[in-house]
Image (cartoon, rainbow, N blue to C red; front, side, top):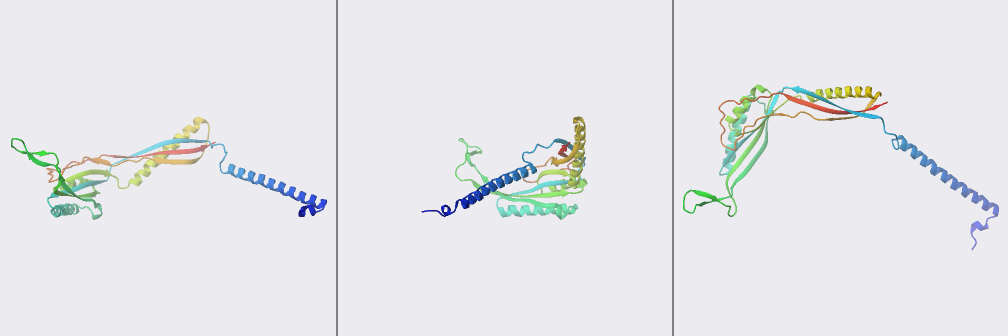
Length: 274
């Protein structure tokens, strides 16, 4: 069977071959053009580019400030043979502590419950007698432990904005039923403002170092291309007063000294130079 192409005259076949050659040449040229375009784009966005001339410097800033507020974490712990009795006793003590705090000028927004836990107390041993009589001693556990009592723990967080009241608040809270003072932390109310001040000092310190380094290297700083910050001051802790349960007797108000708090900031600045 003859093909349609063979039926064409020689001049027509030459013309068709020429068109096919031109088509292949155009396709090849287009491929090279696209390859060149994408290679140029890659160079424009940073690929295959010589790394920028950069230097990084660190700076530190610190601000010493006297605390203007205190946060007290205290717990009211009660125990009884029945869970209801333990809860009732705990509620009475908690109400007395909160009433005292309000009478001392502590606002409602500065008194917060941070925990309320009811825990059964188990007896893991059984009494037995010495071979020849006498007082009972504890023998190894035998069988399932039994519940002997219940413990109720109500934990509160108290924020004091007048540090002159700190000693009296701790003493009074204990006297009215808080039998565990977990911690006393001192801090500053405007912490963000103090952090910003420390950050400014750190940035100034880093910029001074960068200018000195650039002068020593014989280069000129062009612009900032990177920034990183870390570090801050933590709270100041006072010694905690603890008791496992029952009453805590405080003969006189404890002397709690706030001292001074230091807020730090560390920054790293990256410069491009020329």
